[in-house]
Image (cartoon, rainbow, N blue to C red; front, side, top):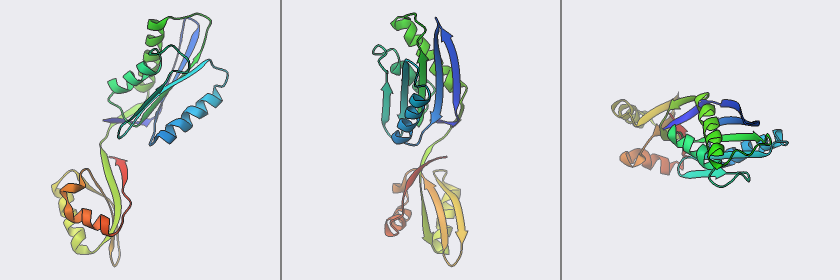
Length: 196
């Protein structure tokens, strides 16, 4: 999958209607809703604020903002899927120009605005990992280090040496490494998702 590493923007006019598209990386549905609200407040005088987002693991949502069903949120979500993106929000502001576009032209307008906003963003191929910090002795550290050199699905992100070693690790599937799983459970370590 790909994520956005730098926001995208695109603006176009079609039959006197102005379409302004924004593409953002989002970590959560709450982040997406905050950004949508900010755009609604900034462009309070527009006719429509349409959006779609896709967030791991399985969140997809679209909003038509009173545009005809299937003409606004759906083409935006389709643009996200064509680009194989996740953790992304695309918002399009429409200033109505007085000319009705019809369903097929409206679909194309939202689709092209979304695709161009995404094209103007910086995208990067990333993978979802799970990360946590644990405190361990040197023997455990050496085992984790050995695993990270042998397997690409376990990575050491940070290491602090002291009497014990404070190590931040990232992994794709912890069930493959029982002893790391035990350490995480024993220390009640907080696990978070990260993109690497």
